Image (cartoon, rainbow, N blue to C red; front, side):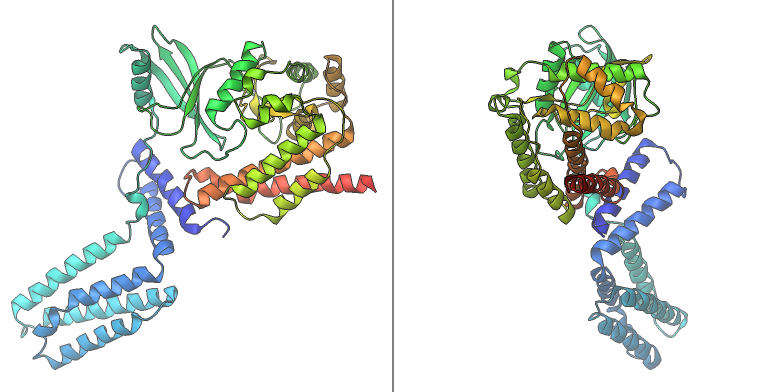
Length: 496
């Protein structure tokens, strides 16, 4: 397995513990409890292997030792005892798990037979028979319970955020004991951040809000992936009239809310328009024009020098770079980040990065601010109108073709591309040719593959426990890599 089996099982076990604490499967003997026990047994076997059975054998031998003196005058039982302990001694040198487990059941059957014979032989003193009964009950109880215990039961885990803990935090922050959180729920989806929606009734804070929180261990150390960096970009875009959420504050202390840092925003109205792969349906032409207008406005924003401390990819120096140099530096930084961070070895990702660095479009112009993750998964619509562009963690300086290519990746055939590009240029957007778009389409898919790879590696290393991570290497990464390679093949074919 690419991901260690014990990490997969542990993450599943943690999710079941969360379900247990929520009361979703209350009651003894239900399916949830059964699955939880099964996961613990499999995790114990995966982690301990032969050592688990060897410890069982050794502990049974120790439990039987006091019986030997009671059997001195009973040759047949003493012979049976010697055969049992001899079999245990032989197995203590075995390392093959299936063989050990099979023989272990045989040892237990022999022990059961011996206990029965001792218990039925009235010539053996009653005290000796009672001693055997006590020893076997004590041993077997501990042995069975130990198979359900493992490291995850004792290691520290972050307390989950809920309405009560959030309310206590807000009451302290605003010195308002009467402030109340009246609604609280988490949003599914997403891998790098947790998102919570909540309503508040109070004097200092009142209305509907969003919390965007870093993972306990950030999945990516690049660009604006920490919320304290993303907060600066969101504020700057909002202050210039761009339809970004209104970010209120960012907190990197939050003693009352252990876990990742977070930012708080006013909740924008509307609903999401799709996923990272596609829109939910065909994009109406008026929405396509709105999207084109939004991107043209973003790409025409003047240099934001106040963002120079947000991340290296939006530093003051990069605003002045030639466009091709800025792109090459950004891709080089990203590639180095991938190589430097723990990741799942991937010859394909490395090969595709090298292709990109060899084929950076040589075009005139200067860098512009890019959202970096433009798609319907990050749009909110209300009554057919685009009201907010979310999630600015991939924001950086670069070629406007990158945002346009990502739109093509995420919207696919749902968008009338010629009409969209015509609207983009009519709103003051840049002229971008097909070859340039194709290059950045490759980059969009490769970046997603590299991000997913790093996240999966943190799961494999035990730095992240989110069970969603297990789908990344087996469902998402193959799709991203295959699509990127198809585009590379098309580009190479067209170059011949």
